[in-house]
Length: 547
Image (cartoon, rainbow, N blue to C red; front, side):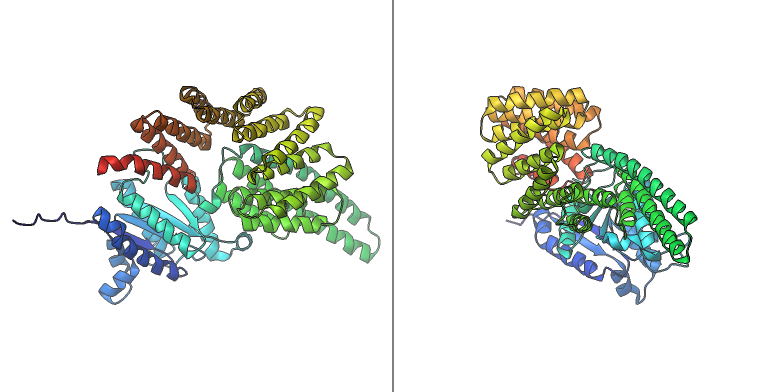
């Protein structure tokens, strides 16, 4: 009896383009391809074929761009990796200024005309300090990043380490081989922001607007300082006094420039232009001692996931305020630094100590707003540690102050926080009561992102109760608010939660479709953990059909 012929392997040609400062990454790319072929490739009957300038060199004995371009023309997936260098000058490749740029745009033209190759772009992390004074090569990289973001034509991501780069290559090539990469035919193509730049734009529009408002106040303050410095210089009598006055004018001008750049960055963040905001903030923060600019910069970098830079700025701000000073600025600096520390996994004792220092200063200054903020911060910290009794105590202390202040926004957050605690303690009726109060306040204030969150929380509560029909109704309301406000992150949350409900209702096809919608949104926003969680569930739902 003869043996049935085996199915030929599907070949996927993958071209990598990069300047000369990424030799280690190119080696890692080849090694990752080899590992994929030994593991995933065998199971899926797929073989990835790596292409790049090294292969052209082996064929012709010299670097021939024409041979390389043939590889670009025939590849199925095109990977561009960039860091600080733009690439080798290309006098014979006008209008392109480097061979790497020529390769990218050649692949892009092919994709636009023929729908292939699929293009992935990866940027190695650049410290904000380097962006403040980038030089000609890095300037071109930064401008290219902004262009990708503004045109929204190509998916791109970021990485810091070789291991992260390997994981990105592995994830994207597996997604490509299994047909799970978003395409223009299925959705609007937008840039996948780097994990380190995973700004949840919709969630933080309020924060970005607050930053813009804060900077308007700063601009007025800087103008006043400029006018005072100019008057002092005009009135200076002696040579020494004139020199001191001139120095004050120079400092005031530098401070005003810093504020202008921060304003530019805040407005870019408000519009969702994360890369532009990141670069503008890097320039605004270079050498500044302005506490507000430092604070806004630290908040921005924390929100986009660059916690090292956020913590550095927050500690710089605290040092300028004076860590032993008993002032409102020092209290705020301690609190902001603790927020950043809480955003990282690990021991929260240092954050608790800082929140308590901020609270102590607020009590000394008899500042009820700051006291409420710190009670809320401590309540959230205790909840993270599972210390629910202490958490409730802190939130109730905050509520007493917020009621006295008549702060409806803060009260809504108090009710929402208590709702989470009660749900975790399975006190479902209490949880429902306070969550409905939060929803009523948020609807009255017109805060759509919080309204969407309130409905999500109420839906999760009904899931815990086992009331799946009620849960679906509430989650649909969250989805409706999110879609109406173009709040993509919350749309993703609602789709995912509805998928879980459908799964519990024994409707796998419905669950799969909802999860795919959630995964697509998470992929757009580069919310990698959420994306992977949905992908894992979808794979489990698909498995019985493929066996």
